[in-house]
Length: 122
Image 1 (spheres, helix red, strand yellow):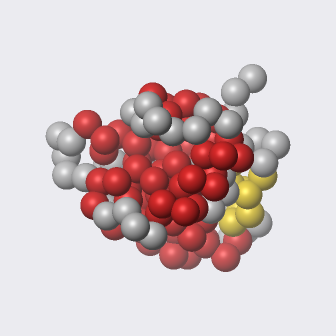
Image 2 (image 1 turned 135 degrees about the vertical axis):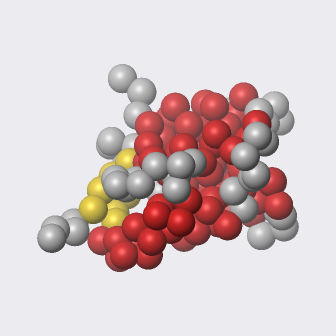
């Protein structure tokens, strides 16, 4: 069975024909190129890095979220798949941002499930 992280990496690779096929190589490439990226490229790379458990880029997914109608905007749904949010990022990015701010410190990457898990409890 494919994890959410693997599925989103597959989707991202389909739009990056020169991206490394190996996951470790792809992650190294993203880490090296990320600081030089801007705009839509930064958004796509943030989504890709999130699939490796790099939580520090989640805010960039929201900050660089393309305008409605842009084909890359759908990649923001990766937040809904990879994080246990109560918000739907495309319907309400502000709610997703608030949820992330509230729960960030409780999130841990689970490589086996390919998702972040939260230790938060009400």
